[in-house]
Amino acid sequence: MKSVLTFLFAIGVVLIAVTTVKASAVDVNEVERLINEKEYDVALDLLYALPTVADQPVIWQEQLQDSINILEDESVSHQEKQLTIQKLVVLSDSLEHGYAPLWLRHQQAFERKTQQLLQQEEIHPAEIERLVDQTELLAPVIQLQLTDTQYQNYQDVVTRLKKQQTIMDHEQFQAVFGQMKQWHALTIKQTNASQTKWLIFTLVSAYLVSFSYVAWKRSRVRQM
Image 1 (tube, rainbow, N blue to C red):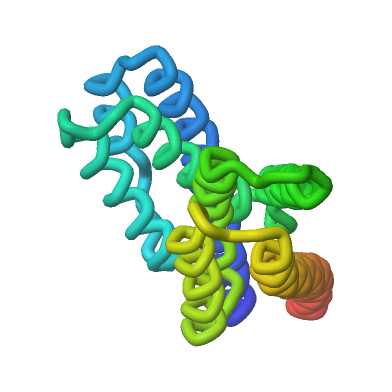
Image 2 (cartoon, rainbow, N blue to C red):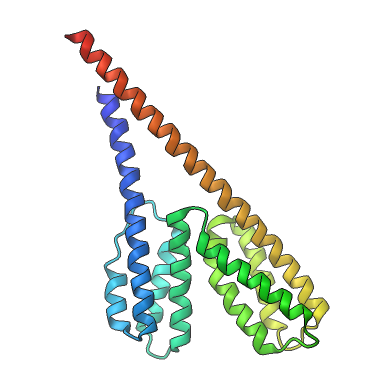
């Protein structure tokens, strides 16, 4: 009986953690709305009030603190504050859903844009600068899914894009994009693997709870 209660308690802790992440996602979306309306102080209050869970990924804690720092800094532009909170929203969505639907939409938009640029006769620096902003948006989920070494390799490719954006020709751009596409594909693979593991855990947990309950009922019948 004691082991059954312990197991059920563990399952309850996991469910509470999932519920907390979903609540955080709702709050972060509200923060994004407030920032778009330049209600920075109210947005900050919501970020301060976000619930914390002991097993939250380090990248989430870092991104949350970075968002708070950016909002508190009056010298930071409105566009940069929007980008920072968008990164938090995308990361929150990934933690909530597992398969990162919002990240996938941004990643697909990034790839469509790069293909369009490769078809142009000339690639303007301003267009590559916007792509760099998109890589910033994608980065937290990539960091969440890849190893430290893999993520550093990805960042090296992004740095190359930043440094060469004013002199990059089609061949160089295609090479850089090809490398980024590989890291994006690996991120998608890791994301799907994580979702599969969570699904298996959920199904096994449901089976064990049912099995434990049946065993407990049988034990009660025997005692009677």
